[in-house]
Image 1 (spheres, rainbow, N blue to C red):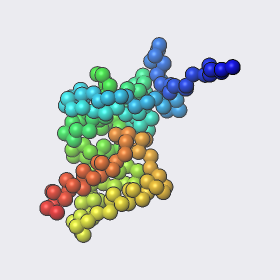
Image 2: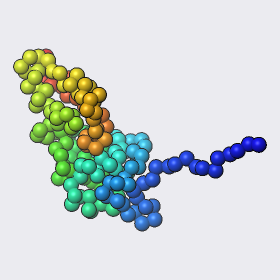
Image 3: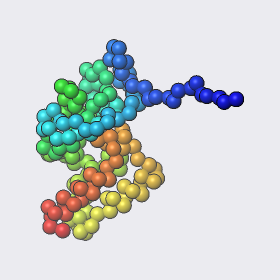
Image 4: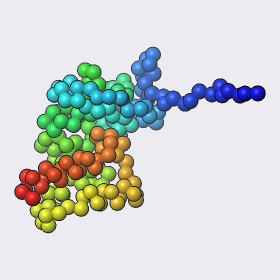
Length: 178
């Protein structure tokens, strides 16, 4: 006798109801998968990566969330010179819509590169100016182990900051001649 399971694998539910596009913007049910692929930014045209609804739920200002029907399907533009932070179709969100300063954008102050542990370009530059070295990567990696990080909700990109921190260190070293 052979038994076949009648159970279907659980699929992640969207916080969007596909019939009425309503959304629980409080985030309790916003656990949809990250949008697949990359989309060109509506303003600069550079490819942008999808971001989780829970990232937007954590970082958007309350008044911005109230204006949106749903937090699903947004993309994060990491182009420093572009004013767009998140976009979905014709919906564009900029720094005025976000509760944290997006450190990778030009003229950001402070220019945060690690939101979990407070590393900024300014702090890295200060270390490099004083000693020619920075312990940013080592500090972040150690803290990722204990107490752990929350990149999905603290970092505007919705992802790990190590690549951005490494890039910032390289750029600052070039800038100051190290």
